[in-house]
Length: 223
Image 1 (cartoon, one colour):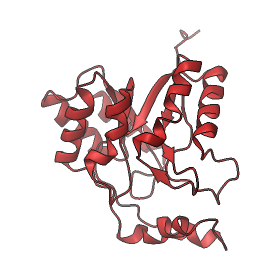
Image 2: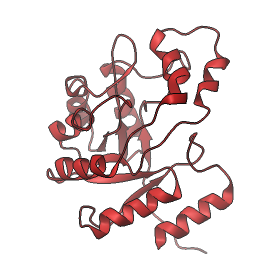
Image 3: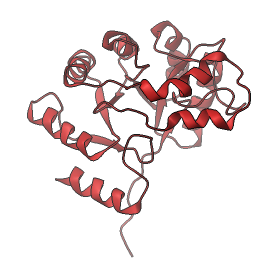
């Protein structure tokens, strides 16, 4: 019999890619996000991955004041590890994207390890005949000329400014090259072991869903 392995369950409460039209169950308000995070912790999640939403429109926001409406509630009700994103809209500057992580000093912060263009994502708009909010259609239809920017200077800035508060990083790798970026920042001393790697498959513009991609990413990560 193979030895038992401990498993750490992470629950992303709302993420940034889904919109209110896609599901009536998407947590939007700070109260909803807090309730779902607390419920996830009670159900066995060890980590909650947090994004904030505009309470009125459901649009993703990096406003630390909005984060403040649910972060303390989660901390008071659970001992779950908080993981606050450092991602954000393509138009947002690096200092805006890290503001919440700097203010609340979570145990973890997610960090995309390279820039990414969401190829073909505009096709999602064709699945819906009407949107609850105008920003939803723009999110997908505008994807053809949009890049989520995580250049070397943006990543270095995030590692320095967020990392100075003892926050560790969950390195989000959407392609093989992102793993080599992890190695680059490890060699520079800005990323410290043990490394926390999240490999993402099937995101448009990133590595595909084929099983052999999983084994390849694991092999490169082990290197």
